[in-house]
Image 1 (cartoon, rainbow, N blue to C red):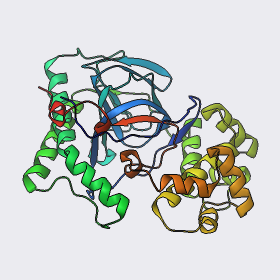
Image 2: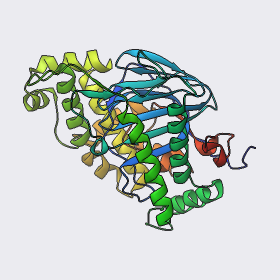
Image 3: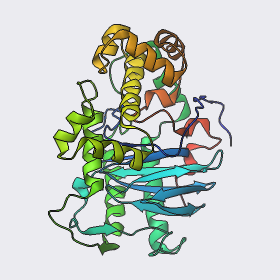
Amino acid sequence: MKRELIIKGERVNYMKNTGYYEIKTNRTFGMELSAAAFAGNVQFNRLHWHEQLEILCCIYGTFNVRVDGIVYHLKEGDLITINSGASHEIFDGSANGLQIIVSIDPSLLHKEETEIYDFSTVGDFALAAGSEEVEAVRRSLGKMVWLLTPEAEEMLQILEAFKEKKTQKRHVVLKTEEEWNCFHMELYRVLMYLAHHKRKTEDVKNVPSPKAVFTKCVEILHREYGQPLNAKVLAERVGVSEPTIYRMFQKQVGVSFINYLNSIRINAACGYMENTELSITEIADRCGFSSLSNFYRVFQAYKGQAPREYRKKEGTMLSWNKIMRQDIMELNRFQSFWELPYDRAELLIK
């Protein structure tokens, strides 16, 4: 049954040859959980990687996911486990599909550094879709995301309060001890099944791989974008030559070092304009721009409009994507659960 509440999200252009390191986690709901779970339809999520283990579960529709360069096609009933540090992107997701995305903090994973999890219905070690183990994990993932997903009416109230700044308190979804315990019971059930499907990988010690060096570079840029940074400074921090920095960014993400750094700074500036009352001058300074004129020039190039125009437009938007925005680039295409024609009860997989 379709819901009346439809929250329209932005539609933006995207490129498939860029990437980012996902660092920040969302705390909109005021929970200090070791696992995050949400439902929606990711049609395109560009190349990224993170320390958390991620499980993608396809409920409706289809999508492709590229993990460390290998493409997997997921359809209804499929799921895939993406291990810590694995680069991945989602693309060609069908319109109005539905996926469950669960992210698990590495502190919960009791495995050796050379072990990875192979709990997936696709790939060389695929489990049969519909098998007892797979269905048990699908049910647990569904219950976890059901517990963290407010009803449409409640979500609208949250958005209205956020828009009007009526409260500074973060909304709490798991309101009772029973719900809290139920969420973790399902989480540990998932972890139990993951533990049954570990595989050893090659152990290469004391040799920093190019991927590890590049990941460190990107981590520094995302955390210190407000500081004076350039290729020379970064090269000295990670122990490589300046030309190596330029080559790594062009090879790994398909854009130049300065374009990648500027995209981080502009993304941060957008966050400040949407969520604070800071002046444009203060924002430019916080985001690492050497002058206000440089900030205006770069912002216009990336967003196609002046910063003040962007702030005026964003200030009038009521968007679930806005309240849930993490430290990611705005080139992704995502439909929130409340934009989709599904009821919350459909998250409870039978």
